[in-house]
Image (cartoon, rainbow, N blue to C red; front, side, top):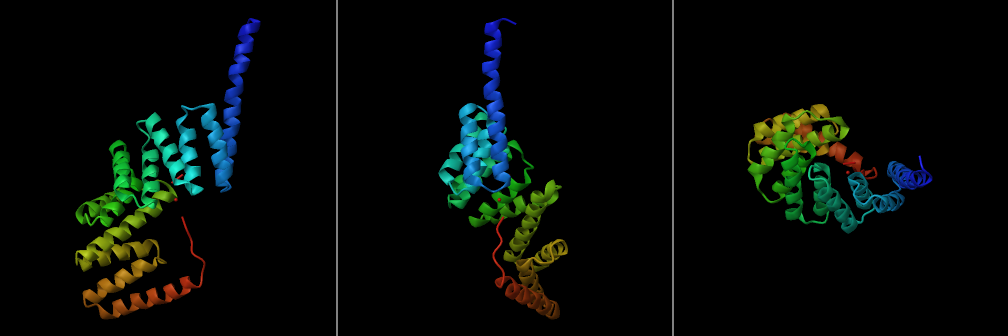
Length: 240
């Protein structure tokens, strides 16, 4: 190898090494929930490699977690622009818009994610929630029911599927299908006995069905659980 060729290979090697180190630093900061440090690292990463989709996506994660919605939207948008098949960037962009209360725009991004991955369980759940907000109840219930037909992959999707079951049950309750509501809430409680709202809806469904003793039992459990939770600190949870 000539001296000039060696020099070029060395120069080209440095950005790769720098990029990998910066990305690992950002990933470590995300794991440690140091979102400001993660955002700084991934900003550096996208400067080193402006066309690297993963760096933009992780920058979106960091900016969103650090409560910087405008910067998160820009980062997720860039990832989506660079990769026409990146459903997760589109879903997460929808999440940021949703948290800002821009439900119509959020719905558009969830639908773009689903156009790429029709069986994207998390995006189906989000789409159903927004449709429910708009009282587009049949479409919302269809989205939740489609979630329930899918096999969840990992803890995040298992948790989301239970959320779909809960909201599908509330849709049945709204439609005065109390048998359907009770069936959904019973299934949910079998998987998560500590679901307070499911206990309430199950009790109320039983009341409408004339199953008085069962209604009292579930509503008493709901009352006791609610009192216990009020003595605790609130717990929060968001798709990496």
